[in-house]
Each structure stands twice: as structure tokens, then as C-alpha cells.
Length: 313
Image (cartoon, rainbow, N blue to C red; front, side):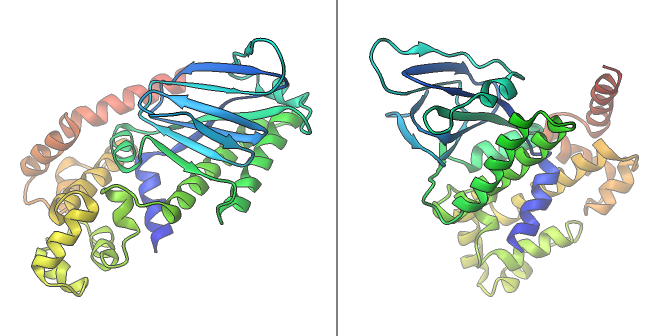
């Protein structure tokens, strides 16, 4: 059930993992980069490094198999290697990773894979709120074998130079992001938010109802009964776990569904309002603008213009 709901949310947020670069280097080295995406991924494939970023009290020591997701950071710095003399400044070139890793000496070199997570506007807000500044999954975690398998396939694709490699890299990067989040969900106390709510056994029956029938006029009493709690206990528990009251969560869920419908389909605004449980088109439009920041029709037009430009490029 958790995985199904997580998959549903991933689709709504248009979560896409991307490999932005990889490199192998021997001796002492250092690399710096500006982070322009809300979630930055760093995988220590082989060797060791010290990872720093704005907002962190001290560097993170990473070993082979460790994966770190930096959330809402603006820069990062990684350094590693051994030997005499000053470290070599290494600047990985986007798209050059096949060549950089292809000649690696995996028995001696430090090998690092970098990536980022692409999200729509709603996804950026929700995932950055649900994750800490650094989500770290160590190689000793029980999920490490699945993570390692994803990383091995990525490295295979970026080094082999086979036809279709770019497509394969995107798909494996997508699975890597999912495995990282699965591992993190099982090892850490998440901050209040939707990601933590999806993992809460006590709230799951109520969340399932809201996800399954978002247009139904759910009341607090009915949701509390599904969770086998009193109305007061349910309201307190839900807010402490999800960070918002139950009906606010329901409204936000409806808006995520509305955004997908407006991006991907031709449903009429009034019909969509009725499907999502609003008594009128104006009530839906007011709620949508309050949540998203623009009217439904303008949202649809903007996304279609953007999609048209991408198709024509």
C-alpha cells in the first residue's frame, strides 16, 4: 500500500531522476559546483570523499556505496584522494561522464556519480518540505544491495557506449531515486509532511480513503472512524504526522490531481470541479488559485505553451 501510494504521488509530482555527470580521479582532488535543482544526488561509487554544502555544520564523510541527497542547497564541495601536493581542481563536464568514467581504474580511483531530481512546482514544494537538508543512506543499510544494483547498471550504461544509453541512464536514475527514498523512509525519523504520513500505519486507512475517492465530501468523523480513533485523537495525530489538518491534506491532494488533469487532458473546468468534490466551478477555481498561485485555465495554457516549445525545440 505504501509503495502504491508513493508511486501515485511520484507520478503527480512528475519526479524524474537525471544523471548530470560522473568522474573517476586518482590522487588528491577537489570539485565544487553550484546547485540549481532542489534535490542534488551524490553517489560514492568507489573510494572516499568529504562532502560539504551550505547549511551543514560539518562535512559528511562518504564511503563506497553511500548515497546522499542534498535538499534545497545552493552549493556543494567534495574532496578526496591521497598523496602529496595540492589537490587537483576537477570540474566534471555535463554529458562527458561516459568518457570520464570509462577509463577509470576501479581498484584505485575515486569514482563519483552525480545527479539531480527534476520536479514540477508542486513536487519541489512537497519534497523539499518532506526531506531534511541531507538524506544520507549508508552502504551498510539493508537497502544497500538494491541501491548497489541500480548504481552498477548506471555505471555499465555510462561506460559501455551502447545504443540507447541515454534513455537507459534516465530509467536507471529514476529507479535509483526511488530506492534512495525507500531506504531513507525505513531508516530515519522523517519531519512532519506527506512523506511521513504515507508511512504511518495508524493513518493509512484514512489516507487510503482520501486517495481512492478524493471527490467524496469526507468529514473528520468518518476519517477518524476508518483509522479506529476518536475524532480528537485522529486530528491531533494527523497534524503531528502530516504537518497539516486532515481536510487541508485532502484539499492539497485534490489540487495535485487537478494539476495533472489540467496538464494532461482536456477536461472542462466545471467537470473537473465536480469530480474533485467542489460544489461549483468558482469554488474550485478559488481553491486552485489559492493553492497553485494562478487560475486553472491560465495554468493549463501555460503548461501547453511550455510543452509546445519543448516539442518544437
